[in-house]
View (cartoon, rainbow over the protein chains, first blue to last red):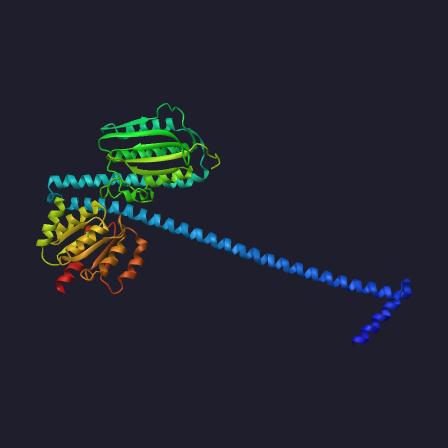
Amino acid sequence: MLNTIMNVSEKFCRFLSDTTNISLDNIQLILICSALLVIIFYFIYKVKLLLIKVRREFQTEVHVVELKNKLLRIEEELKSKTAIFNYTNHEIRTIIHGISGLSQFISENWGLLDDAELRKHINSISENSIRLKNFMDELLDLLKFNIDKNRANFVEINLVNSVNQVIEQCKKLFLFNKDVKIIFNHGEIRKAIIYGNTIMIDQLLFNLFTNAIKYTNQGFINVNLSFVNDDILGWKVSISDEGIGIEDDELKSIFELFVRGSRTSHGSIGTGLGLNLCNEIVLNHKGTIWAENNNGKKGATFNFIITIFQDSSV
Amino acid sequence: MLDELIQTIIATQIPERNSILFIDDEAICHDIVNLVLRYSTNYNVINAYSGKEALALAQQFNKKLGLIFIDILLSDMNGYQIYKLIRENEVLANIPIVFQSGVINQISEINQLIIGKEVDIIHKPYKNDELINIVNKYMRKKAIT
């Protein structure tokens, strides 16, 4: 077989040599080189195919890792959304249970209860109806914030004006029949400019003020505005109330969703949503928020700092 | 303070296993249970507003308790944690437990606990009759046994 191939190739070389006038050795050399070139090109082609395959596999692997991470993130998000849904469901059902159970009992046993007891339970029904309304309002605020935060319109905001406006709003809404005075100390500061979303900043201030008013029956709410240049360069707003204060180990957790300070009365008007929304708003403005108890006197102070230099595309 | 004192005096004078420990952090839920059970049954209600308070009261009145109501979401711990601590406690382990829940999809988790144990669940908002029925179911069963 090999001999036959050799003979055929020799005859073919001789034929080429005769017809082209090139020496037999050169013809053989040319053919050998051509064969080698074909083999080399074939190998290059094969290696290239292999590289493409490897690259594809690698890309698929990277893609799979990315997809797995994405799936984990979605699962986490779903878990947190389910927890929020469960809490919301529980809270609403509990309040409705309270209102419907008490009113059902009163209606079926009208003559059984004396006036004092009737008054107590009807007050309780009324307070819980207000609480349900507040809860729904704050829940909607939180949902609205979550929708708006990604397309927030950041503009220049003067905190002096915002604080003054919210104080006026609170006076009209809550302080007309309450012996509580709000004092805004901003010294010589007339302009405290930050970049932010006007609606969110108003909501932040409104929630902090209503919180302070809710727990101060009588006395003063002091608001301080100052410029800070420590870890953060920004404007600091502090709202001090003369309320019930906060347990030391709850100073951080009260900003978490559905957490209420344990010093608040059972079933108080607090919803566990307001301070969480404040925290979300401040984080969205790349700021910081914290609470502390007032040194040597009753009440607590809520502080937030919002940096003066903000990327308007945040 | 006065309420606690009255609660202690009443509980120490009532017959064995005639009390219900009601654990919920909502004042209005306590109001309903106290009203409904006061006018419809002869059982005494011991009120606890947190997990910590509930465990202390359960320990203190362990011989008086015939039933424990646990709300699933409390401010300091959740209902399952209280349930486990009660079941692990020798003197409280056999007291029937009724979970109160406003969260429907927690049923499966509670069903896992139910196997072989005296555990039940009642969903908020429940009617006052449902409350009386579930209380009677366990308190009368205890009286028969």
